[in-house]
Image (spheres, rainbow, N blue to C red):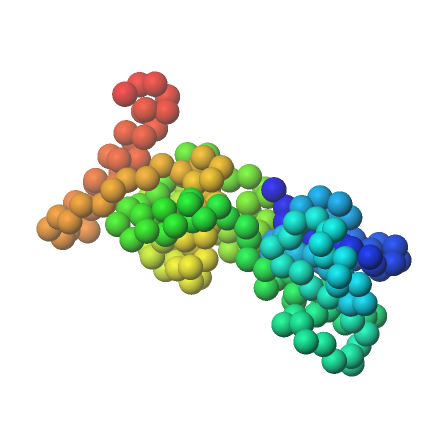
Length: 208
């Protein structure tokens, strides 16, 4: 599901501008949609009506809209008139919403386990980060842990752990516990990997 940018008490012209920026920006790291009613990940409210937050839809973060140059005590604010790059920067600071249980389990398990791809991830997941398509391609070739996936994809391990958590949430992963064995030669390791891949293909075709 896309992340939701909520609005409360903003002029309709600003709401439409927000919709345009969210729809057209190519710099957003996650997929966003603008809503005036449903629960949201980030809520923009008019700086003069912060008391209205009690009637606002539930939100993970609440950010006031203030006049450019105006002093505010809020930890984060969005200045008006709205600049596209400032809105994009604000939205990119909001992490993708991943259920804590799945995220913690994936992060803990990734240290000692490798994940293989059961099916290609959804477009919604792939659009959350520019590296996700590259990481999915690496997973489709062989089972990987977060660390090995980070090395292959040239991204931080934290990004890989989040990606694995999202894939687990949508049921696209199979996990294999790693066991400590004597280091095999390159030829032996390649043979094991090939036999493992053939076994998975046979199981999926019902030939195992």
